Image 1 (tube, rainbow, N blue to C red):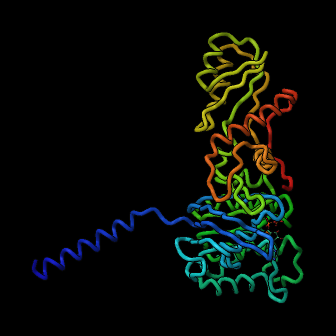
Image 2: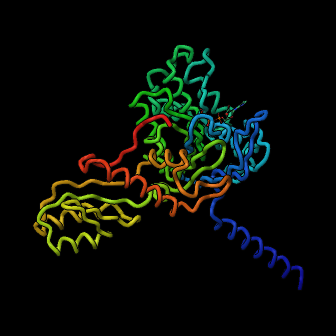
Image 3: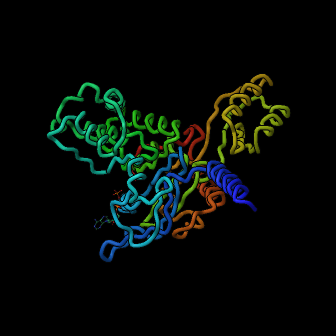
Amino acid sequence: MTSADADTVARVTSSTTAGALAELPPSPAVWCSGLRKRYGRRTAVDDVSFSVARGEVLGLLGPNGAGKTSVIKMLLGLVRPDAGEVLLLGRRSTDPRSRAAVGYLPELFRYQPWLTAAEVLDLHVKLAGADVGASERRECLARVGLAQRTGDRVGGFSKGMQQRLGLAVALVARPQLVVLDEPTSALDPVGRVDVRDLVLELKARGVAVLLNSHLIGEVERVCDRVVILDEGRVAASGTLAELLGQREVRLHLADVDARAEERMRAAGSLARSGDWFTVALASEDDGVTVPDLVRDLVALGVRVHAVEPVRISLEERLLAVLRHEVPGHQEPGHEEPAGEEARHVTELARSRMSTASPSTGPTSASEEDT
Ligand SMILES: Nc1ncnc2c1ncn2[C@@H]1O[C@H](COP(=O)(O)OP(=O)(O)OP(=O)(O)O)[C@@H](O)[C@H]1O
């Protein structure tokens, strides 16, 4: 081979490698494996492994002292793990390039009381080395409801206003990963809805979010996946569909004939108890099955008295896991095959619901402390 041939081969090989690398899926926003942490004789975190994909919202749930904040601090390099590995955005969490792309709202937030809100934001933009102009910084403060307070000193802020400022700090440097540790603990109900919208906006922009919250309803509404920690270990994890199981709809009907029953069977497997019919919907239901079914039943002359969605709530699921009522309680460090376990929990919830009056309606997540 001549040196010209060798050059050509080298060029082709390097462009092929670059092409192959460009086609690789992006590294997860968070990847951790085998995290452990002891404080004295107390084990706070024991063999925790999970990942958060780009654009995914992952909820971290668990009772007080379960190890959620300790996990978050290890992920962010704020606490040194006794064992385990962490990668943020494909890099070590100590790498300044990954740190600059992470926004963090700590559980206990305090900002310099002598600075104004705008100055706190300026400081964090400088620390992140980000190129964020004055109007974008103002917009960021407006997005968290502080448009009228940008020039006020933080020392005069209420707790909720300081938490809003913390959110702005977490968001201002255009992060690719946002870690929110109890982001709504000091917020009023409107503020909670604002945070929910913010998280969904981040997700829509492809930003990954790790959310630690005791507000289960909040987690259920915004999270794609959930990791439940208990006594420092992963007790359960999975997508909401995996954890909550199959969705059902209960219909209270009159004048049902064979054609109507056939129509219901086409929507999912059917069970009947008197005038109540339960249709188990396919898990990939796109949201039109139930309206279409009701429309068709009415067209077939059926009188529809009630339509009730039925699904185990995340709260029920969480309590079942924490009370070890779920068969196959997950062993530490193992991602669980959620389907089988989720089915047991669904059965559990169903048996509870069957003892309630039919008019109790759908189960819904309540904004209760875990
Ligand atoms: N700096 C520390 N020194 C000693 N023990 C600690 C320290 N930080 C956490 N722990 C202990 O580690 C365990 C897990 O605490 P962590 O704050 O991670 O729990 P959590 O799930 O975030 O709880 P919460 O929901 O109450 O915020 C607890 O037993 C706690 O007492």
